[in-house]
Length: 156
Image (cartoon, rainbow, N blue to C red; front, side, top):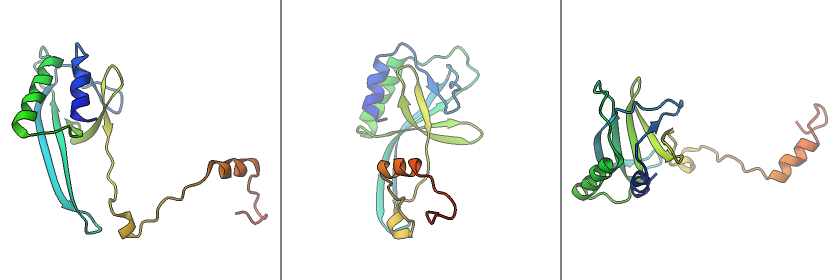
């Protein structure tokens, strides 16, 4: 999710909820301890120079159980961050403390902001000898389903 969409969704809400990938909710007394711009310049395994920028939201829960961050306050914090850090409409990455610090993507389901698991990936598969996954036509799958392979008939 990008920053402007996040602000738009926040402006429609009366309370904020973040849901972890396992379905549990981040405690409602969470704090947003950071809104930042993370800039990453790197060279991938294929030797290509790359540049990435994301907005980082850090969520944190303490023992102040009466704390509640209201949507309009978070929009104000984000707007201040955009102004001071010259942040555009960047993709959001959320940090949250589990057993270790986890980084998540963000989606909205109409009620909760869902923290979605991020995966690593090779950005230079063509340079690393990693074969592309073959694309299979649906018609071939249907044909195979109607004519199952039987050992000894040469199809296996």
